[in-house]
Image (cartoon, rainbow, N blue to C red):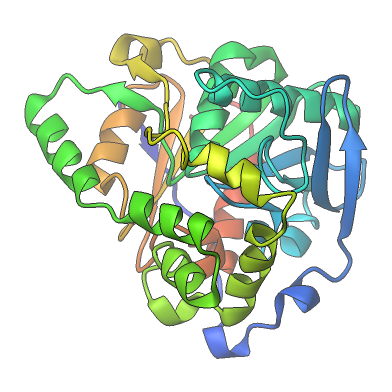
Length: 318
């Protein structure tokens, strides 16, 4: 199996950072509300008409729906799009907690959100941890999935190529994410949050003070900080438990999936992402140049073009 490279239908215009509006302006015409499924309450940002194809956007670990502020209005022209606080994050439900099965619960939470929206199926894109959740969703509930996008987040895989496995392990060991995350949960100040948020982008100046303040406000909320302490295992001293899948499990993955990577992702390398993509039978691959862990924020026009081209592609194009 080899993932097919995605080629954009048009070259998008990239708006310079200094010309981008504030998040409040980006979110004009979207809705902020709580919806309740059979099991959970979900806080969502929403755009687009109900008759359009449904699309759910999932953030990374410690994140929130505003991570998609630069994408919602544009994607709403093509989809009925929902950016959600995942379970255990933001203003969505934080109970029941199961330390060993939290990723499974978050995937079940996505199904619950579909039920809350009245959707039998939906396209789903997950960024970072949201990519783990999206893969788990496709593995356990393929009948609820349209097309899926894994954005700078992959399932943990027992890689059979030993040289690649060693390079990937060394790269992960150099990551500062764990330390930065623990610092900001224990001591949520503008300075600690700015360092944590700048890890997400290739060019430090592309992370705005406004987005830093948005997440800081969440982490300083006494209703949310305890949930973040639990997500990051601050008091237990453990690492984030993520399920590990085999290459054979990848080969049985049913949904059509795009692995959407970035040239300067500080987590898994482009080489590692391509290796994983090549082991899923209905897979596509795309790499954004000059971007880090948040391609949807750094180059929103290109990100949105990728999603429109992939998700609205005619069946049988592969």
